[in-house]
Image 1 (cartoon, rainbow, N blue to C red):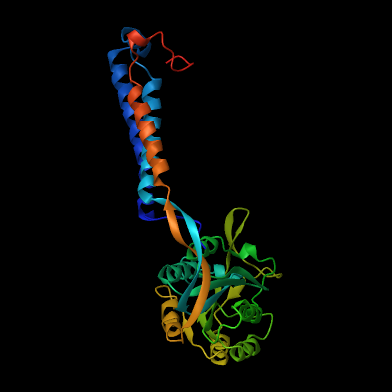
Image 2 (spheres, rainbow, N blue to C red):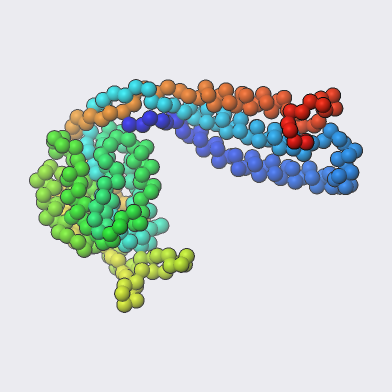
Length: 346
């Protein structure tokens, strides 16, 4: 359920031009100041040209900049939801269980295992239309990060905040993630449920294969994605602001390697498939193509179906700022010298 949105969000990229505009203004002011210095002492020039103002051009530029910002937001068409309805769609429920243990910081997948997995999930969410999605994070234990939903915008927002520090207990408890996944699907929704586990497979806490068998009995299909190198790599960490590698109690670097065998067993027990991730392809697309073949079910969700445009507010702000900019002259007017629009001296 999305209360606020932009109908044309691509226009917001134009806001990236604002720093360029500010830089050009600063460079132009610097150029004008150098030109005045060539004429002589700046204070003397100021006395010879009493109408010249240093503050008014800055005020006008700020007004123009604010008007430009309001205009860009206006073009993006901000909207607020005005009507809530229960919408029924044909789709499947998908929950992604993402490993956020320290080993996912290894850089055998660039830029690192976790970041690359998050990027792939984000791209997958962009392609969703009628399906529900949820997100579970796990390390030494499992936690629901995003309950099953069709609010893809919120899903992407929460996805960006995920990191190893959000889970208090380190380790890799794949079984706990599977058990939580079983409980996280909507009750009574038939067999159109899929759980995708993205991990390096170094399970230390429980029996994930037994959990996968229970998931299969509950009608949940489990797919696994193995991410990382089977040869093993160290885990980078920051120590006092400097890059180092995670070490054990004896001072030796901890080596993390992909355990494909356990992930293949989980996929077989869960009637799903296993995919090995690479730098170029994490494997979510292949697995989701398999999920699309599942029997579709009627999914009901509450969401805003009508939106009211609010761009008029920003259009009015832009017009007001431009009118105010037009009224303020760059130079002082001798005829209006006695009229003080501003309390400070300009």
